Image (tube, rainbow, N blue to C red; front, side, top):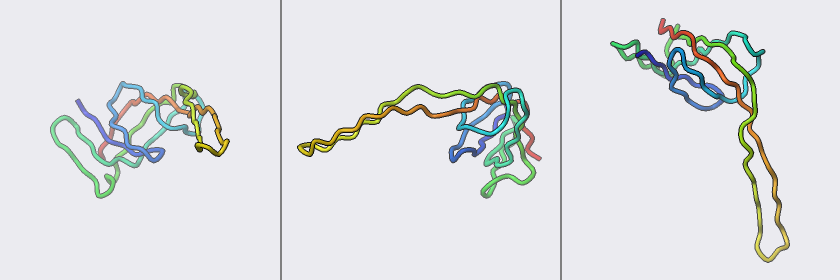
Length: 105
């Protein structure tokens, strides 16, 4: 099965055609097309190609399924004996992307 390792949002993801992934928030409307050009590694089922640092001419195309926000995490800070405690919640935004095609160039 072909796969690729792409870099987006400061993170790296191993992606395969036909699957959906939650990645850090991207600009674009739901249903719109998106293209990732920063492909670090690609496998077409027989050969593995690695880039230094990325593959020239390789791209991964996909479709934006939806935008959303993740589960809430609690950020709690405290300094003992100083009467200091802060409690805040945070929800990280994400974009759900369905990968359509991997082209290694």
